[in-house]
Image (cartoon, rainbow, N blue to C red; front, side, top):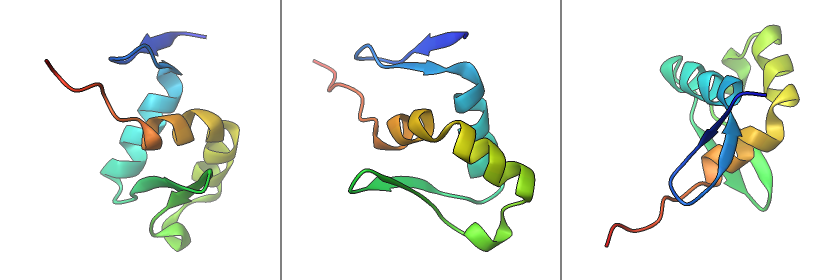
Length: 72
């Protein structure tokens, strides 16, 4: 696993970050509510995108819920 450390120490696999960027580039927003990953425009997802989302769900949740520490 090639991990990328975000500010504040969150480690996320680079493939999950690439997926999140690709999904957002295709017009899908990512968010987390009550621990569940929400992807906007779900009907526009391909079968491959759905499979990738399931494979990287925990990382995508961490990315969507991430709030960087405040700059001091």
